[in-house]
Amino acid sequence: MPEHPLPYRPHNHDACVSQALADAQAICRKQNARLTPIRERVLELIWQAHKPLGAYELLARLGEDGQNAAPPTVYRALDFLQQHGLVHRIASLNAFIGCAHAGEYHRGSFLICRDCGTVLELACPELNNAIESAARHQSFQPEEVTLEIAGLCPGCQQANHHD
Amino acid sequence: MPEHPLPYRPHNHDACVSQALADAQAICRKQNARLTPIRERVLELIWQAHKPLGAYELLARLGEDGQNAAPPTVYRALDFLQQHGLVHRIASLNAFIGCAHAGEYHRGSFLICRDCGTVLELACPELNNAIESAARHQSFQPEEVTLEIAGLCPGCQQANHHD
DNA sequence: CAAAATTTGAAACATTATAACATTAGCAGG
DNA sequence: CCTGCTAATGTTATAATGTTTCAAATTTTG
Ligand SMILES: [Zn+2]
Ligand SMILES: [Zn+2]
Ligand SMILES: [Zn+2]
Ligand SMILES: [Zn+2]
Image 1 (cartoon, each protein chain N blue to C red):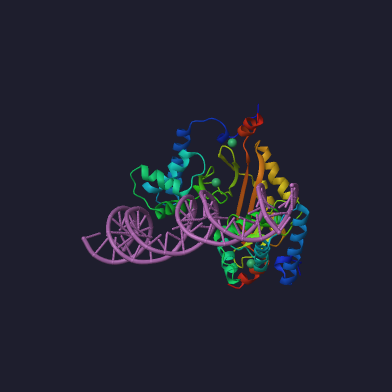
Image 2: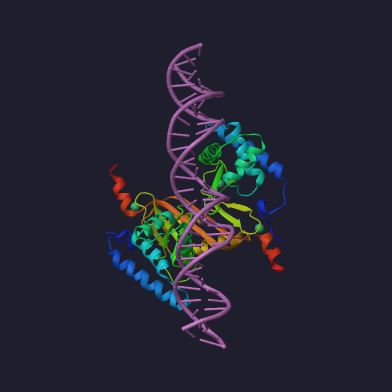
């Protein structure tokens, strides 16, 4: 039986979220950044969803809190969280997801299941090196890498097996 | 003196565009697909720009033609062109660019200069293999890969040298 | 030619993101 | 405590990107 990475295994969401929030607080303290209630709440919502959330979905959930928030509120919080490496934007989905490697220097790559929507953040230095060296081989100086792989996660491969 | 790939070298745009259109016609004939005037014009506009164009930029240029086009016109043409491997959408830019390897089986990867906006489509099988194998190593079955590398092209590195 | 399928036109609408400016909260120095 | 400064949030409006829907025209097929 193969050992799947965390997002693909059943696990305690609440602990997962608490851990992410605790990490975020530590990181912000260290960086002298203010993890204000709104920012923290947005991060919490993102982690709770445990899959990419669009800005307007976030907005709606803030609304359920009683928060009377407008789009800029959410986008500003997301900017902050991205700036401090706490969330990533998935360009191919126009959505945001909690960073699984906050605090570490890394470039996020993502495995996105088209069926169940879960996303695994891949941290694969060899792959990043291969990408960078391919770029440099063209005399190109890479700065931002967007690598998003859509397909089927292990669970959904099995499920779709019986079609 | 390094030999740079075509998009980074001065070259004859018009020939470049004509060639792309001729190729497109051949490909569509072979696939029994109809490269209608609108579709061909959209492809031509994309190639003429020689950098990624947004859907609404295309719309505006069609307008200059006298075409009284609405958004669906452009999006439909773009869908067709993508379907037949004649253009790619760049997710990180919400823009479209002509495929430099039309007709060949390939997955596009892109080097996007943040300064001059030119895009080089990279066809690097080793890189694609590395990406796929990294995915499969997580038991993930990849289908669509979005790889977009933003940075500085050779020309703009030199230009920015003198800052 | 007539029926069927594909393509285009047109209007409305939906979603995602930003601009601009007013207001409030947190904080440092007097 | 008050003052003035900066960062953060509220508010309104608007821009940019993309889709749905249905009707009309065109092309293909029999
Ligand atoms: Zn990350
Ligand atoms: Zn899945
Ligand atoms: Zn291509
Ligand atoms: Zn450049």
